[in-house]
Length: 82
Image 1 (cartoon, rainbow, N blue to C red):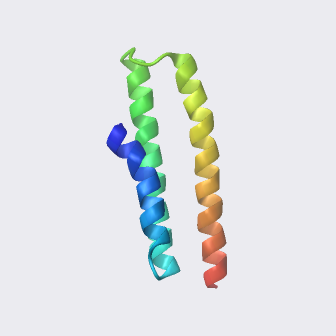
Image 2 (cartoon, rainbow, N blue to C red; image 1 turned 180 degrees about the vertical axis):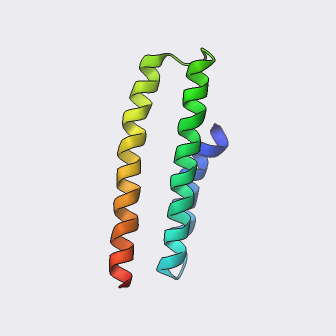
Image 3 (cartoon, rainbow, N blue to C red; image 1 turned 45 degrees about the horizontal axis):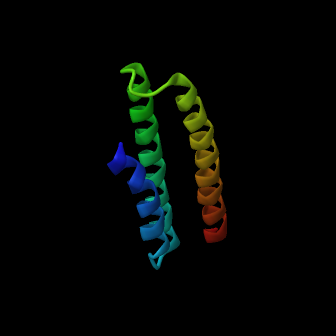
């Protein structure tokens, strides 16, 4: 879970440092994948009783918010390319 969650920001930062916008978009997709992977591990942690369901609910809200922001950023960059 630590690797997946730290990969979100790392992919955004690495993509931002790329010269081409299409490369940035590729890394944003990777960040979105890492976000979903983190979500998976949080759900699994709840099923295994390592995490309280209430805590998962809080994380789910943040994950949804971040997912929307990533999708909006991807869309905005695509529009700027065309």
